[in-house]
Image (tube, rainbow, N blue to C red):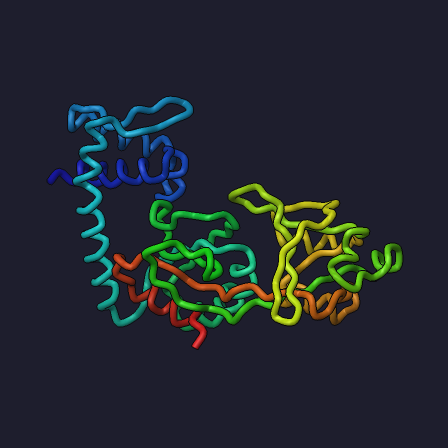
Length: 296
């Protein structure tokens, strides 16, 4: 097959998977204009339009859809063969694309990367922090990291953490001004800092656990954000009470910048897992990454 046609077919599949020329260009590390030129060249060589595109939308034509149906299994087969070749190497090499929510990225993956990088200097990590729900296959990630209750179906999962401990905190200045709540009912007269879910846009209902019983409630929220580090910073500045990961709050509790409140009421989050498609052949680099992240 003409090499330009083969490379053009791979570009075509990437554009459709990405949903836009701009996103596909970022994934492939080339300019949008180069990608557009490759697509026009492919359509000219095949003498048929494969994409319907406007300034706002992009979709394969009927001919393009028929081509994709035959093309995707071939691309998957080639990727499997490459994976097998990678597994046969004596040393891991290549790039691993990881999609993880903020807590896992900051407090589980990042602390383990220095040792991993020393042991596997030829492996690069592309870590995308995303608190929404992501289709890692469609977005071409090697793996995702989420709590076990949020894992996609038909995936292999590897646990990379114990259950994550939470803690309710506030600054000394806030407590001096508003008093210290002793239980969840007391929060009704306080100012609370809450999290907005990336996918649904809903404000997270606070969870409480005591004597093995768990419940969730809405609290009077006066500050909302979709970033857990902004939540912590808001608490440090005295904007209200919030729920943080213990790992996130520990140094501030030791320094006295934050104070734990309502001890005994904070729940734990489920363990985090790396998950990846069961149909993909893991590369040597990915196997090494799994071993570095795995909790034994």
